[in-house]
Amino acid sequence: MTDEELLARADAIAVRAYAPDSGFHVGCAVLTRSGAVVEGVNVENAAYPLGVCAERTTFSRAIVEGFSPGDFSVAAITASPCGGCRQWLAEMQVERVVFRNGGRIVRMTVDELLPEQFDAGELA
Ligand SMILES: [Zn+2]
Image 1 (cartoon, rainbow, N blue to C red):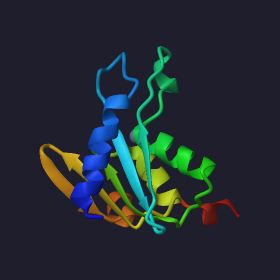
Image 2 (cartoon, rainbow, N blue to C red; image 1 turned 30 degrees about the vertical axis):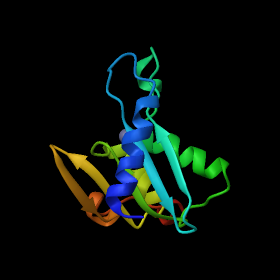
Image 3 (spheres, rainbow, N blue to C red; image 1 turned 135 degrees about the vertical axis):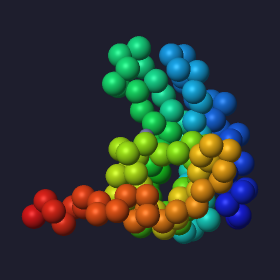
Image 4 (cartoon, helix red, strand yellow; image 1 turned 90 degrees about the vertical axis):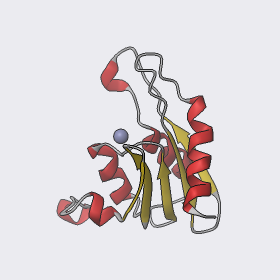
C-alpha cells in the first residue's frame, strides 16, 4: 500500500469524525506490519479538554484489536499531528508518519517529528 493510498483511507474515514464544536474532521489510518489497516477519527466533547484526537482513537482501537507498540509501519493523518499525538506516535514506535500540512504531503520519522522524546526508559 502506498502512502497516498493510506492517506486516502484517512480521508475517507474522516467523514465519521464527531466534531460538532470545531467542524474540523480528522482521519487517521495506520498500516500495521501484518498489512492490516486500523482507522480512527477525532471525537469531540462539549467539555472541550475531554475530546480525543484521531491518532489516539486509532491507536486505542488498534490496542483493543490486539496490536502492540512496534506493530505499526506507517501512520497517515489528514492534518499535522499535535504535540501530544507526536508522543503517542513515538510510544507506538511508528516507523514513518505521513500527513497533510498547508496543502503539502509531509513524510517524517517519529524522531524527526519529536526529537529528544520522553520514553518509558525514563520511568525507571
Ligand atoms: Zn492530537
